[in-house]
Amino acid sequence: MAVTEHSGPRLTTGHFARLARLSSKALRLYDALGLLRPIDVDPETGYRFYAAQQLEQARLIGVLRRLEMPLAQIQELLQAPRGDQLKVLERYWQSLQQSMSEKEGLVAYLTAHLSQQEVRMFEIFDREVPSVQVLGFRGRVNIEALPDFIVTTFQRLQQHLAAQDIPFAAAPYVLFYGHVGADADGPVEVCIPCCGRVTPGKGMAVRQEPAYREVYVSLTQEQQRRVQTILRAHDEVARSLQWQSTLPVRPAREVYLQPAAEQDPALEVAYPFWVAPLRPQGQRNLSASPSRPATMPR
Image 1 (cartoon, rainbow, N blue to C red):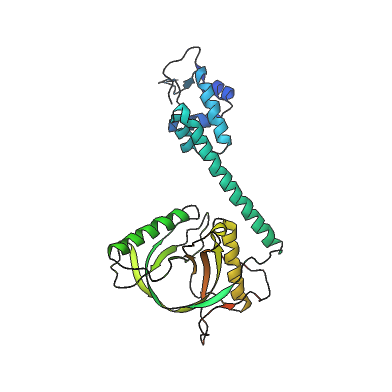
Image 2 (image 1 turned 180 degrees about the horizontal axis):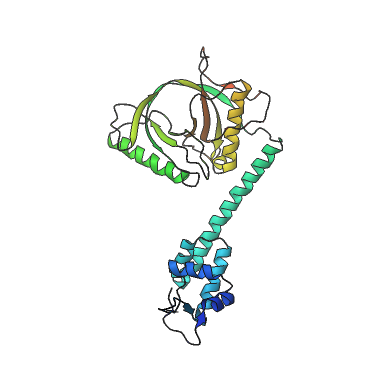
C-alpha cells in the first residue's frame, strides 16, 4: 500500500530495513507484491526511499511473517477495513491451530508405529462385493487438495447422474491408484456405483467393476476427522492381508457412508483381494490374527 502523504526525511532502503527489522531483500519483495511500496524511487540509480510513517506497517508485516502467514493473506489483512483485520487474523490462527493439531496427531501415530507399541484400534472384517457399474472421474491431487477434490467431484458426478435420472447402486468411494501426500499426487478416482444406461460427461468414465472380496474397517464421523486415525486404519487393513500372506489386487478405497448418528459408520477403508474358491457371503472377523508391524502407503 503506497503512502501518498509523508513528512520528515526520506529513509534509504538500508536505514528503513534496520528500523523495521526487515531485510532489504524482503522490502524488494513486498514492493513487487504491492504490500509496502517506497514513497520514491530515484529514476537514475533505482534507489528506493521510505517514510518513517511506513515503519508501523512494515513491522506489522514482519510480525505476521513470523507467524508464517502467507503473503496473500497478509495482503488481504492490510487491504481489509480496520474492523475486519482482526477477523482475517483470527481465521488464519484457527487454520494454524487445526494444522498443528493434525501434526501432533501424526507425531503420536509415528511415535507408536516406530516404537512398535501400537494397540489395534479397529475390528477387521472381510466381505464379498458384487460386480457393479460405476461412473468415475480420475485426477492427480496432493494431500492438501484431496478433500476439496473429493467433495467437488462427488457433487459433479451426482449432478450428472441426477440429470439422467440414474439412481445410485451403492455408496460412493474413492480409489487410490498411488500414494497421496505432500509431494505425491496419486492419482485417485472418485466413483459412484449406479444402475441403468449412463452417458458419461467430460473426463468421466463408465465401467463394470468385477466382483471381489475385500478386508475393511469402519470409522465413525469423529474418527474420520482425524488424519492419523485414517492412516492407522489403512495400516491395520494392510497388515490383516499380510498376516494371510495376501496382497491387495486392486487399489485401496475409502467408502463414504451416510451415518444417521455420530457413532454410526461414516467411512470404510477397504483393500480388495482375490480368494478362490470364494467363501460364503457374510462377514468373517479377522481381528484375532497376531499383530506384526507393517505399513501400506496410501
